Length: 352
Ligand code: SF4
Ligand code: SF4
Image (cartoon, rainbow, N blue to C red; front, side, top):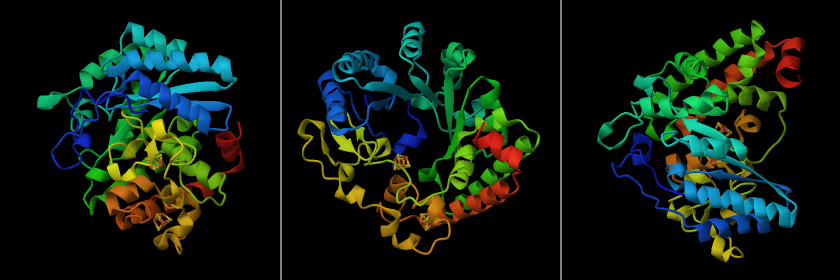
């Protein structure tokens, strides 16, 4: 649920054209309608709502009302809600912290690393850096081990091991480092792949030193190994437009949060929930991606992220070749690492 545009003006949201894409503010009627839409359209007993922005905490009043509404609905329908949020962390305060703890909201903070790295891309208007504010405002929850970090990676400052260690040292629990593919030049894909390989090899060393708890905090590395360990034939890389949808501020329905604001990707509106046009998304399976038919990593990659396809190739059914090469390099190394794991290591990583 995208509830508000942002208080920062980071380069990520300028989408390369120098204009900031405003999303506006969701009102409570639309938010409740979205909850009702979820209840009506999901057969599951456990439902999840993730608050996104821009910056969702700018609209904390609405978040409180939505959570309260969901708790009322839980009693009525016998289903359970779980909440999560992705925030830049600049607006946390005592009241919000207490609310997050009380309602078990899983909070992920967008932070790219140390001050120098973070402020390359994340700042207020006028390019005023946001790192010090993020550190100050997240201090209490970090100290309680209640925050995860999501760092966005570009080639401007590519020391992933240092970035990861920094985020761990300041108390973030789980850490994900993900490339900002929309900001990369073609030649940067290979550079980034090499950086991730070096990063993964460092975590292989951690495994060999039996530092398993540490390894398990690296969500991206663990996902790569898990995909290999639990490999199975899949047709989609993620649940976008299937087990998850994103709702924009006016109730428009999108395949996932990264599509919000792209008029071509609107599948319907929660106020007209019986008219969802999602065949295009349902048919976006790896079996229908021409480029993937002969690709040797298709059961691990499963055609990749359809939003990356959409934004990089202009078509959700067409993977972007430089990204495919990037992925193949990383998967090759991940397989080699996996094959070097012994029985004890496999047990510790996947079964203990
Ligand atoms: S690497 Fe590219 S071609 Fe291969 S499965 Fe993934 S998206 Fe398809
Ligand atoms: S389409 Fe891409 S960004 Fe959206 S949920 Fe799937 S993997 Fe994530």
